[in-house]
Length: 142
Image (tube, rainbow, N blue to C red; front, side):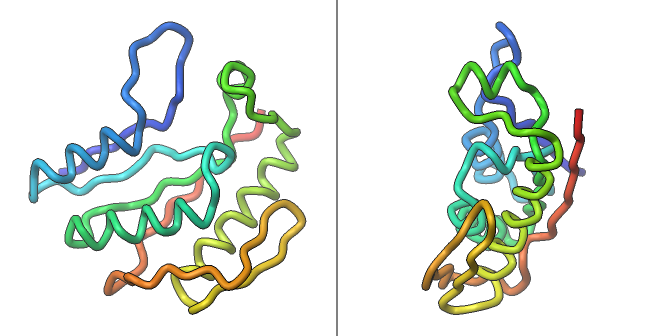
């Protein structure tokens, strides 16, 4: 069985629980379910931080976490939280760089990568799980 948690900061006036908080809570309460985000917007969190959070959750949950990552799409949500809402092409390019940074952190020590949008220099993700968190990519462009 799988439990997928959405990553909305808000969806108009609907009462939502933040995705990382909810997923971590549920992963700690059961050892049966597989967990994942459907999907995290790469725009809302630093890519290196997401790599560390995902690798730790994957490790601490005994490899039951799957990272769903997307380009973001809900413009009014970006506006409400004062995140820049770039064109679809730029958001997809940012998503590509975010994935490159995450993979670098999971595979290199230290990791350095200079992209057009994001970069890391001598960054560590020391507590590697036995395997990287599986990564699911979604890139809706509206």
